[in-house]
Amino acid sequence: MTNSKKALITGITGQDGAYLAQLLLDKGYQVTGTYRRTSSVNFWRIEELGIATHPQLELVEFDLTDLSSMTRLIQRVQPDEIYNLAAQSFVGVSFDQPLTTGEITGLGAVNLLEAIRIVNPNIRFYQASTSEMFGKVQAVPQKEDTPFYPRSPYGVAKLYAHWMTVNYRESYGIFGASGILFNHESPLRGREFVTRKITDSVAKIHLGLQDVLELGNMDAKRDWGYAKEYVEGMWRILQADTPDTYVLATNRTETVRDFVTMAFKAVDIDLAWSGAAENEIGTCQKTGRALVRVNPKFYRPAEVELLIGDAGKALRELGWKPQTTLEQLCQMMVEADLRRNRAGVSF
Ligand SMILES: C[C@H]1O[C@H](OP(=O)(O)OP(=O)(O)OC[C@H]2O[C@@H](n3cnc4c(=O)[nH]c(N)nc43)[C@H](O)[C@@H]2O)[C@@H](O)[C@@H](O)C1=O
Image (cartoon, rainbow, N blue to C red; front, side, top):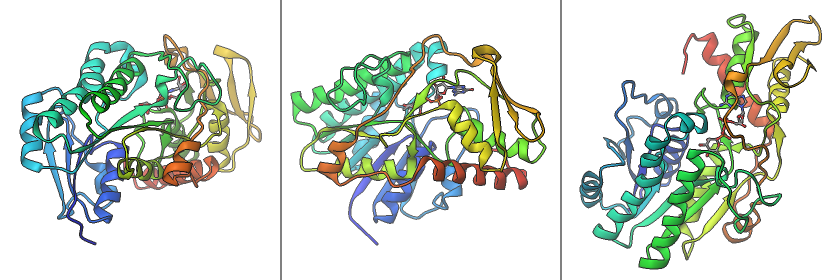
């Protein structure tokens, strides 16, 4: 399918960037994806999706904190839509690197908004906002009008970018839209995030490549959906008649412990839990072997205890609804990690 539309995606090497690029290429868009220079730039996600060498995909190395190069890039590409998915997105790291997180995750979005304002105010802009902005939640479930209370430098930086998007919408009439996405996972998730850390470890333990899985707070509750469906929601948000803010979530919440139990079940291991807090362990019911234990080094200075979103507005106005259950998602992730570990590849 061809289509005359052009999209710019910042953060093409991340989970969402890769899935969104695939979706837009399938729709016939010309896609420019930007990535940050790091010591180990890695294109494994777009390679796994089979789009790395797609003729309609251009990859550009780019720094979100540099307004002048951003302006030149937008002048050259002339995109119809910009999806800002680039961020320092790991909550744990943001406590150690609050300033870098603020520059990339917070100010980076404003650089894009400024460049749009300068180059072409008709460009549609999607800001990747996050349930981390609800943090210490002020209502259950959380929706678009729930007051924010971020609990990490990451959440604070995202909240700044979110309000700047709203502000540019109201001040300059820019089509600045924001998706408040709850946790969304997939086989393309990085292993620094808890679901993928769990599914990769379960695969390794099952194959005899690892002894035990160590985790932090297992009582944290998250609303986990399937990332591939969430990028479809991003696209719908930018196709709406007017720019707005939408929550994307499943409206189901489970603990980290529940996800661990589910992941071991996917390889036919039933766990029994014992001990509490720092002494909690998960043992194999059949063999009595300890497979999971808590290591306080993974605790965060401030924790988000409970997230559960209400995506009713996205359903009513955009027709968006999650389809994949957490059990299906977990199974899909464990199977992908079994496949990779059997093949000796490690992403
Ligand atoms: C929507 C939001 O979603 C993500 O943020 P996150 O919820 O912090 O994701 P996570 O997978 O790192 O942690 C989930 C929970 O799991 C707990 N937990 C326990 N033990 C470990 C552990 O060993 N590692 C990690 N990473 N977490 C652990 C941890 O303390 C937390 O309560 C990002 O995409 C972010 O960019 C974003 O926007």
